[in-house]
Image (spheres, rainbow, N blue to C red):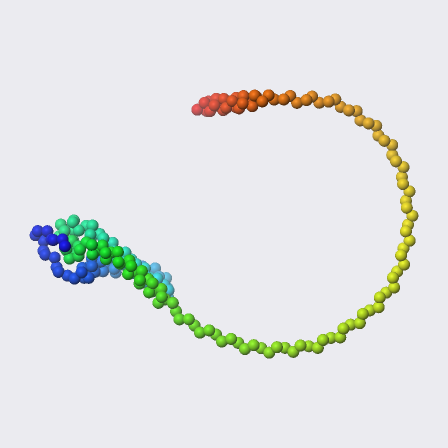
Length: 215
């Protein structure tokens, strides 16, 4: 346990639980009631789901703030001991060991998780009764089957028509004159295989020259 500096009052002997609670600063929790301002202004705070969500948010803010206070007291303990008011804080005064304060800051979010789970279970309403199944109506009577109609008589087959005469074949037209054959085209001049690298080098040189002029 840390001893108080010379000239300072002796630390008050309080229990560990009370020292942890004092380090969590419950007097600051009322600030977190601001989370209810929006649903209250919207007139939805009376709904069960909104009320549960607001309560969970309030507890979450309190848990995070209290855990932060405990860690901050451990880190600022050397400076707090030289302060006329802050030296009365549980860690600075020696009433709460730093290891205990850090353990409490780690447990606080766990307590919030338990509260959130309990709130979710409590928010589930009872299951309503299953409605009764209606009675099945009576089956309608089947009407009588009508008589089958009589098959009509088949009409007589008509006579087959006579085949008409074949038309005469027309005369064959005269054959047109043969067109004159045009002169043969010149064969394409082959490009030597060595010309492609040369054209590539020329294009690269022109591009470099244009780039220099732009600069």
